[in-house]
Length: 329
Image (cartoon, rainbow, N blue to C red; front, top):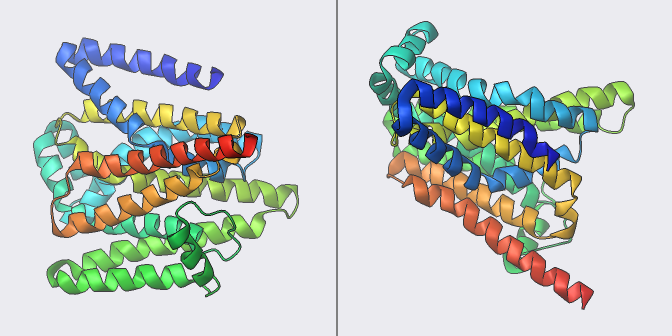
């Protein structure tokens, strides 16, 4: 429970400030966004917990402390500004002024950058999920009829990268007017995944200095993973309100509690007792990535996107509890 003291204190201060700034209506919208961000990000927390298990206690603390400004201001404010600037051909300063002084125009530009955001996020998240399933050393399977077959294909080197690149090419074929944007953003997601995952693996178990570098690489990886999860949510938040302070504070509070929940999962060793929870989280990530891709072509309602993760994680939890009862019987 101590992991939740810091997020609770920060949230109380932030919500008090929002109340004095905008009254009860602003407070209500902020709490709504915080609840949505928290409840629909359990799959993110589970995957984060798996990565945190590869980090020492020092880097785990830094994930909860140093990572908060990155999650709140970097992912949910600064990064969208740079994406909008690139997509709209504007300067970052001009976009930042729009964000502060003309939120409706900023939200329109952000919506216009949806293809780039969805391509980057879906490519990165697809690689996260596919790398987990395309693993011929994976012995525990939840949806066995599918996962066993995917595991056998894992013997082919870099099959997940080839598959994601193929998906990007097919998607680009159907939207020729935005093909360059889709391919460029998707390739950035692919390259980032390859570089950071490779760096983290190369530094593991090679001495204290190498472990520190590996921890730093995993720290960067986790924050990029958080970005991939959250960018589409930032766009969706403008459907609830166009007020940037409410969006940043609401989503930021959600990010605080998701990170605290992640640390709690690690310290309680939950993933080792609930054996299918990690499987459910990766299926949820795949569902989110595919929903982001489909969202380039057709409108995918935000509640549907969020419920994908919640349903998979909930079903995996139920299956894990059932398996525990079998083992203990």
